[in-house]
Length: 337
Image 1 (spheres, rainbow, N blue to C red):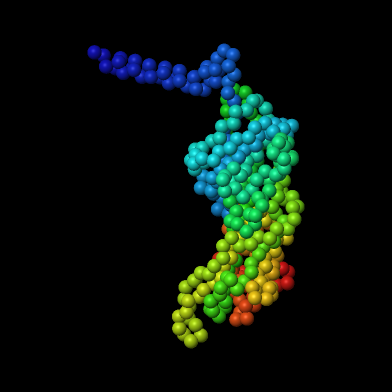
Image 2: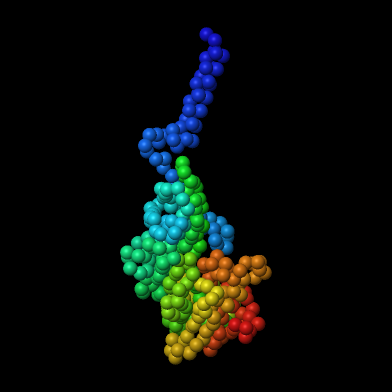
């Protein structure tokens, strides 16, 4: 037997098979013949890397996604939603079957989940019919709750004849978690029940482009209150004493530079203001030279987890010479804020 001839023929047949399969899978018309049209549209990949880590966290953070499709004239074409665990798969792509043409795709993460804190506004029949009429708002009663994470993104795409085009739709986060910590400088323990915490802002309603629509001032109350030990330190007598601080945890909608959100901490016994500050200005104290080229709004949008430590004297008055923001000690030169 001529083994070389047998081997050559085997490889030759295998090559013909691969060539044939390649022609089949690369030619839409080879599969859809006759009167059937070749399927076409978009394979949509989602990313969420608009954060301070510049890393894609979509698969770990977004648990439901809704995509609205609009044609070139701004008319609503279709809506597609995914709420299952497939979103955790880094290879996941949403398939949108669309005819040849130009489209605008708008995505909301967190809108279709059972725990959603935001909803489409306006009459049900017209909520998404026209691109520029689309409005999303916070649900009633959510200002004192832990908001379900909410994301927005959009991209313009073109669908070409004869197949699918893969596109990427980037998302940004529209919700924040803000932890306010009070610590007595002399080490005495504090109780959260001795204080009243609140944040006020007008940021509960979003236009089609994710900008805010005036909707009235809302008061955010803490979704969590309590005390926590930070360990022990030497007291004035030299003994080790446990340091207990009070904290309040807030969940808010998007912070924007054109608004003036305000953080207030009062004494519970007499409503006397202890802390009353323009929140954005103090958060911006964290924007060091490391982020000098980053715009103020981009900084607020990329960061979504904030922690602020305020130090009080023995009379529960704020020692307003410095605070700690996200573990950074910030010294305040004053009166600009």
